[in-house]
Length: 377
Image (cartoon, rainbow, N blue to C red; front, side, top):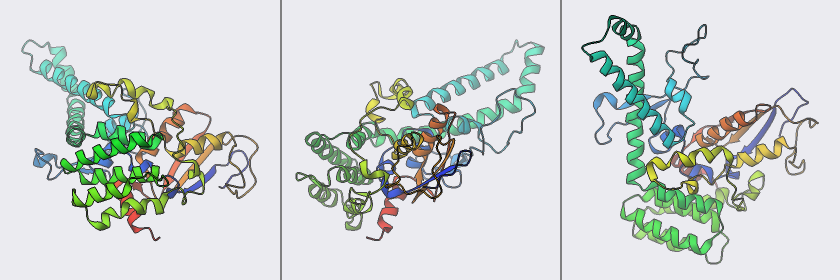
């Protein structure tokens, strides 16, 4: 850790191996869901080859820009024409909120079209429509682009039973209930294999093994056997279940991740808003989907309260006596958009302490498993 006297940012560096859980969990914020389920590459989402996607909608640009767009009606502020304003304003919102926002946007577009086609429109109304036409067309295009993306996300969620599977993942990440976990994971793996969702089953077993690696009644061997014999998982891919423990298991986590998965089953207030939003799709309480907090949450809490031990976290330069006002967190080995969403909410909740997140690259679960595979034991 690099800490300077008051007025200079504090730099905290840690290894991705300290938190192997966050990249494996299915996220529920918009940007992170797109990257996890569809992939974001150079701000582009490629839908080519997906059922029902038209040729002119195979690739979409989701450019958030470098800062939030100016508010509607604001004057004298630079507006980035290449920026996707809907994405910039809403990329950290959850799946349910995005559905509601798109519904409102499409209804507004339909209403404007009805007014435009109304035979008895006044001269004033027609003039207003003509004046607003380029802006309306721009907003309609953005709304339909995100509707295309949202439909594909919804299809993935439904086809792969992600609400159900995510609740089980969250239980593994946050609760110590081995008898319940064995039953839930065994049934879930069987269901996923029957639906040909082999990668989801593999990821779930990796989560189980991280949680119960040292338990005498651990059923990892049985689960891996099912992945190979019933799901047809290649031996190299099956080896990832045990390799993830070598990469980021309890023996590998010697820094801030040493207390990871210690059952601090406390809801973070930043996610409380989601409970009343996601139920438009599932109809039930969804708190089971949002139990986990990334390790970075505890790091920032301890760092701001000056609770990090100098013995466990060596510092370069003298420690500041006051609380840090600016923190740069850098994750070696890659961060996730879920962690970026947490940082954004942290900055909103803590205006006296600005946090910036940096990393070597941005993971989804697939790229993280590739990272684990390339790790030299």
